[in-house]
Image (cartoon, rainbow, N blue to C red; front, side, top):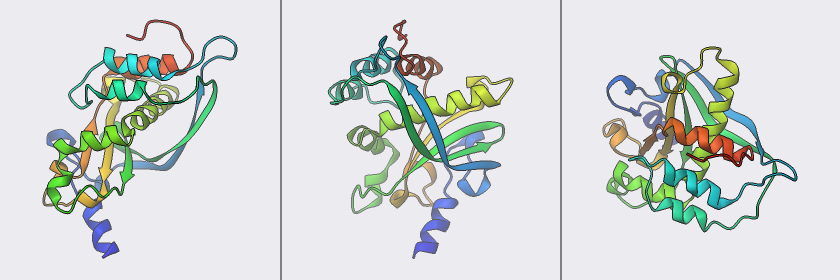
Length: 203
């Protein structure tokens, strides 16, 4: 059963059209990609939840629930500065673009309908996976800025995949079990500034 499940996950299409590829077809990958993000500036600026929420409000998109910014703003954490360390499950390259993926084994329901793509934003909001995905997005964006001499977000940043493994099947493709978004460039850049402790415009 485990082998069958892994084979199914590896061969499920993650996108459509020019981005219709599966995990088994990627050109390169960095598993368990470690990153460090400096947060705030000592004695100058600290990062608070309301700043992050303001950025999401200023840069809406179809893939982001409009109500999530309010939920994020209510998230209880003290103002922080220092260094955030994390690990991205998978950074992958396909046709010159870089994508990140996070694996989720959440049980969302008994049948496949529970894993329909149009139902996954609710799961992304409930578990604060939206926040996690944007921290990962900033980390990958900064990494590519440092490593690719001709880096351009629109050309090289492919997007974010959250893979709800229980709902992934080759027969249904990206319509089930796959949440995908390419965050607007302005949102990622604004979040990067906020996380760095900038007091500048979040837009």
